[in-house]
Image (cartoon, rainbow, N blue to C red; front, side):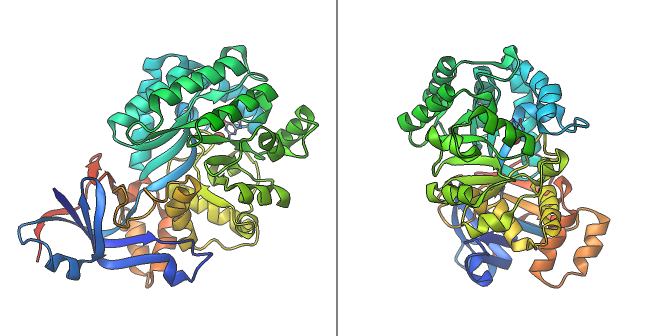
Length: 441
Ligand code: GUN
Ligand code: FE
């Protein structure tokens, strides 16, 4: 069964910072996306593709919108959904006062399922179709998350948090139980449908060396699972890591010693990185999740995107809810732009939308499956409504170029602009503004 969508279509083929801009993306003013069995079959100009299709085929025509690949969120905490926007602290106090008490409730699998359901609907509403997700220390939190993600046919990566010290007793595992629980979850869920597992030490301060070593052991036992943690987010955190691991030459080196770097390793934040650390991230193919709304909300700092680019480190966008203040990647792009402005740098809208789609897929080593709409890719895509608000409608009317339209979307856009989200070619949710049933030809 073919599913066919018509409208303005944009996707990326490469990082616009690395190739000629025109080579980095494809843009069809009147494009056609043909999907078969959940995968992209064809993509091109409507005029040429329609002629080759049977007359009676049904086409869904999206007008005043932009069809593009679903957003990819490379760092988010589902158990922090209900504590988003908690007042007044920076990282370490925020964890103590708000985060740990909120995460305690996830020992209850029924509660965890309820939050997972709501969380995934929030992501889909925001146009995000794949995410790399923190659970809590509780095994049940990951069972709940994967159960719901599987029902929704989503491509998701999640893991049980490892933390065996410097956190409340009610959230503490041990090197041994953390290893065994993670192993059981990998055996149960990893590569089931579109689900994949991430070994998830919270961050260096909450794991003993023994626990980090055991995390490394899991990665060598299961070489295609992910590693997901936090790195160099906050100055006080970095000082604490230095005091806890005096034998290491820096924060990243703590993880490196336990063999936690690699092509499927994702480090959230990396706001305060030395050049040698960027070099090491590059050598190992590791990625950074850039989390603008979180970095501003917790006062962590201004991410140095140019440094990451100079060392050719893979970067994806992350919302980091609940330290992040929105599920919307568009809102993250707004703050990403302002962060680069404060650094005296420009973030072009092409780079922004690349980071949100194909860049995220590369960061997650999933560029053969998602991130753009090349034939063979999984058909997770969204439609962004240019006319979502009266202001946007007026502003977009003034735009003469794609560059301008994308920039306006990234400055003014949010969930209101996501008028449809499609998972494996099927529309999910009901916020539709479309003309269905138009005949081809
Ligand atoms: N570092 C360790 N844990 C966390 C967390 O839950 N959120 C953020 N933003 N940073 C962390
Ligand atoms: Fe985080």
